[in-house]
Amino acid sequence: MTDRAAWLRLATTPGIGATLAARLIERFGSVEAALAGSDTAWREVGLSAPTRRALAEPPGDGLTATEAWLAEDGHHFLTVDDASYPAALAELDPPPPWLYALGDLDLLDYPAIAIVGSRNPTHAGREAAHEFGRALAAAGLVVVSGLARGIDAAAHEGALDADGFTIAVTGTGLDRVYPAANKALAERIAERGLLLSEFGLGTHPARGNFPRRNRVIAGLCTATLVVEAARASGSLITARMASAANREVFALPGSIHNPLARGCHQLIREGAKLVETTDHILEEIAGSIGGYRRRPTTGIEAGMKTSTAAESTGQDDSDELLTAIGHDPVRIDDLVARTGWKADAVSSTLLILELEGRVQAVAGGAYIRSA
Image 1 (spheres, rainbow, N blue to C red):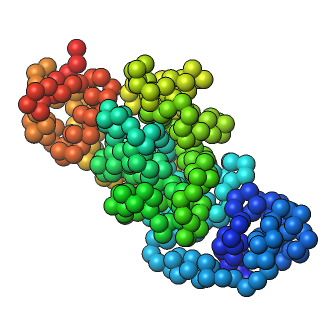
Image 2 (tube, rainbow, N blue to C red):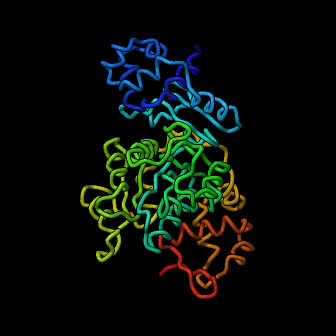
């Protein structure tokens, strides 16, 4: 049995998850030795009788189905000892022993930020998640969330709308989408970004799965931003997991009359950093992301770099656009003509400037500098 085959055999055995797998490998020294263990030794590690029987019997249909799934393009199975396994997750104790992935594995090497929050946000909360997702993706970060309704979906969509990259960590097997309403979004993410799960194929959504999903989200990212959350919510659990893993935690403040702002306010009282603009995040994490590998400039970043004036003067892109705006209302088409940038690059940079409070939208689709 090859090393990969042994890992797949263990991963597709019913009843074995991250904790039990870590115990088995610690007890036996390797995954192959764990599979060859005795019933007595397995019982001492904590395996139930049905799980011990499953390990002792020949592999079932689950292994066959997983091997067929992995034979398709873009489908991956990573173990903790693979070179492709994300270094950030390897720092967790214990790290998820394996991950199933669908999409672009290279994204696991790039600086990432989690955006999480309520499944039933206010309209303003949903807009904020979309705007921060879009702006942070345009700034070069991979936006990570959990594919849930509400804030998660808005953050993923914002990143995709910026022609940026996003990772969705799921609480089910990757052959399922939960909630089903996000199926089209999951397909976009698989094509443009990455779907990731520690759960095997066929795993249904279950209450106990989502804290494990949240742990992967928190561990994978340099920082976590909570947009809207009640005091008792999975988003606060994610934030606390991030803090426990020595990751930065940010929270968006809201009205004292909004119940979904109370979780964010509680996090701020506990030490999370209050956020009003993307600059607040980028300035805080600049030192943490310097060592990450980055792919060649593509997508929105490529569009933003088409201006030879910015390259020749060394001037910041957003400052160049601010100069092009001048002091009178100006429309996007006019800015395209003045800068030579693509329209999507102008739109994304305007969004960043607006989040930073440096410009504001006015009637007629125009923009002006803020006072």
